[in-house]
Image 1 (spheres, one colour):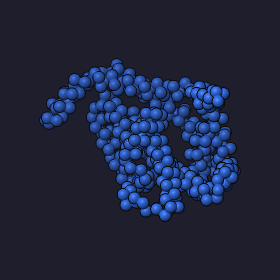
Image 2 (tube, rainbow, N blue to C red; image 1 turned 90 degrees about the vertical axis):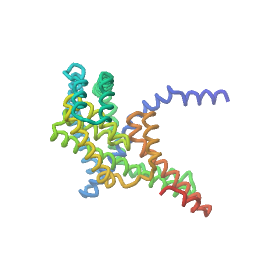
Image 3 (cartoon, helix red, strand yellow; image 1 turned 180 degrees about the vertical axis):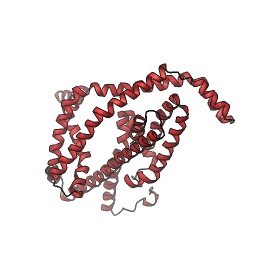
Image 4 (cartoon, rainbow, N blue to C red; image 1 turned 60 degrees about the vertical axis):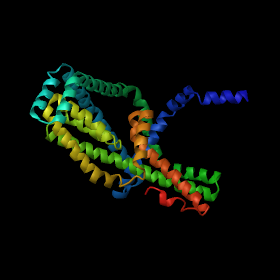
Length: 357
């Protein structure tokens, strides 16, 4: 009994957990890459009429090309932009009080007066907050760059494992199905495979759709900001596209640094940037997102907000991005399981009228 206790203590200790995660990190990364790339592979097979090996090679070449371009072209520009913005805000000739006073004198509206008075009192605090956020962003980017060397072996290993996973997809899935059929009766095995098949389809379509949607939004923002001469257009557009991955809160989170930086560097451009963001978000919300991601992921706003908040608290930005698809996945599994149980009991219509459509 005592021996069993100590074995459990060792297995579930934080140190053991960290060791397991660290040991399996290349496999975990490979699984994520393969899961995301499989949709692209299937697209090539369907549209270009190539075999699976050719589809995998094309997909990997595209990813490697985009990764190489990002590391050698885009990432240095982003670092340089952040550094320039920080220097401008800290040491540049920016007088927030003067800018706000001019706005206050030009607009005769008491509500605007209240806002400008508040900004005048808080101008230094605003500068400090924005600079603090930029320092954090700069540190994150620099941390990623400094870890490129130490993480290269892990990522190369993960990418190689990912290729094998993609090429042996059918074999892996077949073994998984054999395992389920071996340990469950026929009816239960069919239920499990059906539920996980449906959940996987919803999860993958949502994740891939949101990734494509956010990429399009980011590209449109970069182009629009460049045409409108918004300061640091590539960086600002990339921020909007990245945060667009986060449901509900993403557009707001992404717009704050864009408008704030524009306000410090060229105040009239802040309004221009805000108008562009609002227009693009309207296009995305009413046209792009419903067609690419889907009209409804089957989760109420309450659960979306909860998943984003809890995911963000637990896992940061990654948790905010993945919170909704994970909730969609779990919701599908639970609901399908409940539906099957009720059907077995002949009570499939229980409380259906009270369920949210």
